[in-house]
Image 1 (spheres, rainbow, N blue to C red):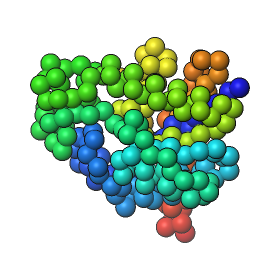
Image 2 (image 1 turned 90 degrees about the vertical axis):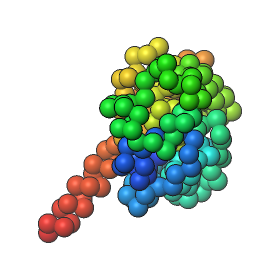
Image 3 (image 1 turned 30 degrees about the vertical axis):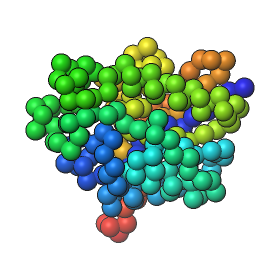
Length: 208
């Protein structure tokens, strides 16, 4: 039977806004991030989730809790769903380490700072998502994690066609994938219609 996973990036943090590297640092949602989580919960209110999983880091867990309250589920927090560990770079801004767009797949500096390799991240991401899918055969499950983790998972699922270096996940973006017969199928990628609609409604209300 097919299992469907809703893969969601957490809401915004102040460190996101500052372009500060988070990795395993436990940074909570910003006020905007909390609003995004509530908007996400409204968007997913009619989805019959059998379970809600999240990274054990606060920004993902708080996002998952907003949906779980509506779904009447408890959040199952797993450290395996954490963002890529970036060692000594965590807490620094992108500018401070001389990067413009994102963390490279591999960089000679990564080993020296104690960072997780991309290969290790991709293996971790696909392995834990497969385990969740097998545990919930034929069901629909929410998984809230992090942008780097989700891109590594998509990279592994699609052989690099999607994910790292290709896909951008805005905060609370929804990606849907199906696991059936040992094969992943990507159904939709980085959907943020709920945010666009909510922002449009807010603009209309302020102008009326």
